[in-house]
Length: 200
Image 1 (cartoon, rainbow, N blue to C red):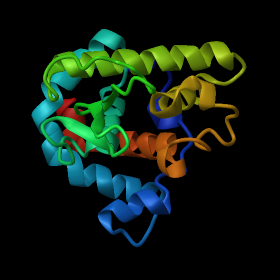
Image 2: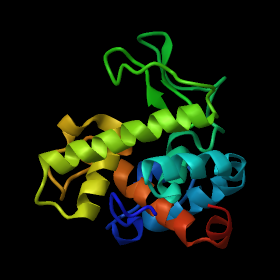
Image 3: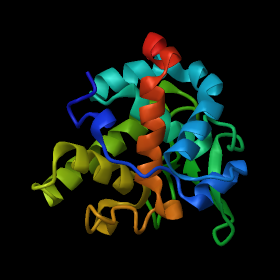
Image 4: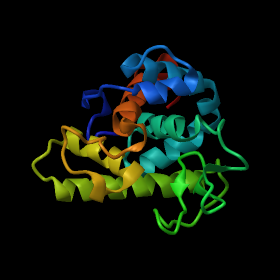
């Protein structure tokens, strides 16, 4: 399971940018920073393991990837306010809902919030959105390898497939300029850990 959309272990990654790493006051960036942040969120992530597993099986997505997006988007819920995140001062409202931060901004993703912020229903909705974008990238870039398409789909989850123009600069328009690289590195850490192997 988990290889339908590519093997996360085989996806190239440069890890977190300096900007993203500074969220945790890290003095380093790259894969090491991504791994450190994933590890920081690991204990909180265990609360959602059963739901993550069920959703991953349904969508044929590696649970380590779902965990990595939860880590990147909400730090396994730690950064949310009553389930909401990404406050938009212009709209005076939050742009995103839940552990995986589904975009509810009418000018953005325009999704409705589904389920409680930490529920299986929310994870199911968000993972469905991720799969949708992976498929869009597959259609847009049919000559990319399966792993490249997976990485492009992760970037598109953050900013839409219309903003993915090339593989070499797949994160040029993503938050922090590193979204897919950081998520992939976090997923690889979750994939490699004993706690992950025994639970996910």
